[in-house]
Image (cartoon, rainbow, N blue to C red):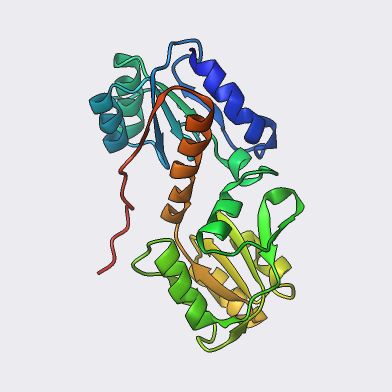
Length: 250
């Protein structure tokens, strides 16, 4: 079996054409015409993940976040991106990424997996950006924060809003969803997303929209989900990276 059979199948769920124009999904390093016997799934390609791949003799690394985002004008193997490229080529490993095409997919998607991870089943798609909304909750911000931390295995979250506020509708968008604050402020009670900046939090507070900032690492929910998709279709060994969050909470 060649890598292209794997990537073509995944693209029936996450078409590369769904990615934003500014994104760089798909092949990052290597060839899709190499044989594949083992696969690693990780959120983000980094040197530690690459070493995991080498230790397991992996042929294909599938990630959510792309390795190559900004143009490269040189490959410096003393810097992380260059070192990752060197490790991949030295060990005949292909790196392939599904980023915003996974976020925006219509059937399975990052945001659906996040919503399901916090045990909310009655949700609907919203537009072409992969945003998920629900309007059938009966909880408080405090209770929802507790639920999100527990279900996403987060030691801490940041939040905006009155901790005792009643919550009856939410929106979920993985990664950084601050661009939706203005649009959602009169549609839902709380937005669950990540990477909120200070003035974005101020804007949400002024507009009466609660926020739960789950960070970027919560998107790791894609790792077991992609593994499940592959193992149901292919006779191939699939590993889940043991990658940890870059942030620590003191």
